[in-house]
Image (spheres, rainbow over the protein chains, first blue to last red):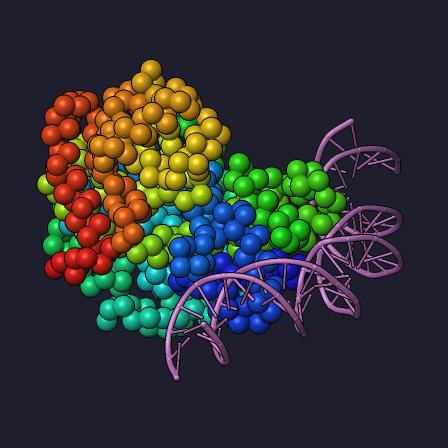
Length: 251
Length: 251
DNA sequence: ATGGACGTTGCAGATATCGCAACAGACCAG
DNA sequence: CTGGTCTGTTGCGATATCTGCAACGTCCAT
């Protein structure tokens, strides 16, 4: 592993916390200012870092554009999107698509609710991993060892009284989810919001992504939302079929 | 500028084109495979690159998460958002917010149309710089020298018959836009879509961002859309006031 | 079996990187 | 106006770091 590159890349999460000047960067990297300067310059030339008018550095526009391309290249997103849109047509609620990658779960697509009340979320945003229905599905499918390690090193913030409180409870929930083949989040992230989710599987049978329907209490109760489960599962299965190459990409 | 870091960062745009294996990366970088391997490993440890099951590399999830944080840290976005939402409430059309940074213009926020017909765009996506109304405003404010250089090195794709055809036409359009203080895109990007845009200025009077309202022909004609101009300008001015610190962040 | 393609490792030599120290410019206070 | 401090910047020599090589392992197809 390359020391120079390692240091340079360490600057990015640092700047993600907010703008910083040369001295601050050098200090946090524990290197000489001149070293930090050279690294920042290189990052700058690639557009990953921007120097604002007050001379401080922050993350740059090209980083955002790169991430955008990264998402557009995910073929699962492309395949799933029309299905998500159709589901949204049918039920009117917000539909999400999420994937797991190296200890993170993130939304990679979203179709907004047609109802005026919308929940906050954003494509690219890391998911509340201990409570979100999609996260449960994605983690439940990990090999046992990895799952235990991950569950152990996670934090368990109590967003609400119904949030998953700790690792054992989480692992138990994951077992249940794996067995039943679907998952819910009933007010575990935001008091008044419920979700139902189903897994999307690749040709190898492993869970490649997960999708969910979310709606606030004020629009439908949790029970009403659960009646959508069959529809959600059918949609997920349709995507699975197409993604794994079994179905010849209908329509 | 650091050679090692430079090479490592060059891998990112390369992978943005699509997944690639070690050999391909090494070849495009013109380095030995072992060198490319070490660079990729370092990128991997930072989560910027992911190794998919077929061993090929593609951009990783952390890159997306980083970009997300980068956008959330843009204070102009935070200030502008409620105004954009309110404007959307009032007119119902899609509202965009865009910034310019180092030869790129990109959308950093968006409020979706309430009408069923939606235009395609995505936060983080680079804007069609030669035709978009927001791009015209942002570029029109650059210092003359920079503007000429930029206009010269741009491509002028003819998305439609009304696209800006070349540098001289573009520069002339920019002059007009700067003078009148607002801009339009009438079917220059997609035949049936029109936009009206207004600039947001910082304390120094320079254009810091631009916002626009877009709607397809089938919903409102270009003339009807133009009647929204005063409203758009008023909204942009309100944001300017708040951003430059003149207005004490109403409400 | 055999060949080729691809990823991976250890090593020795070359070179690019590092920290230093000195410089330059902005800013402020006396 | 002057002296001080703070910031970012540059040139340089020592050396730690990176590089390319060659050899190895593995997988797949012939």
